[in-house]
Length: 86
Image 1 (cartoon, rainbow, N blue to C red):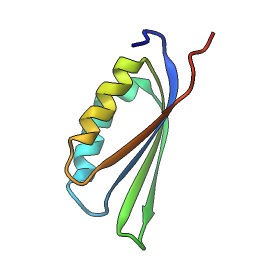
Image 2 (tube, rainbow, N blue to C red):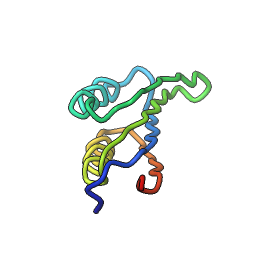
Image 3 (spheres, rainbow, N blue to C red):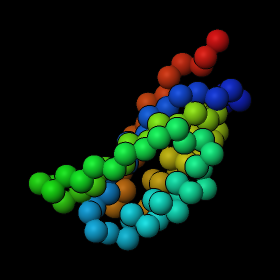
């Protein structure tokens, strides 16, 4: 695992109006020092909401963050990590 910070985009999908929202925000608050920005977008056609989060963290921190999110019922998580800055 890399000890150097990497840029990553995390996409989180969850059911609109579910308890998952509160659980996601709780996890986000624990990792807020790594967050550069976020956006929430509802998708009323599918009754889902999406969070997009831009982060700068090492791979251990990114893995811990996405791992906690992935344990929340109804939540799907995908991430894209850019190569290390040199």
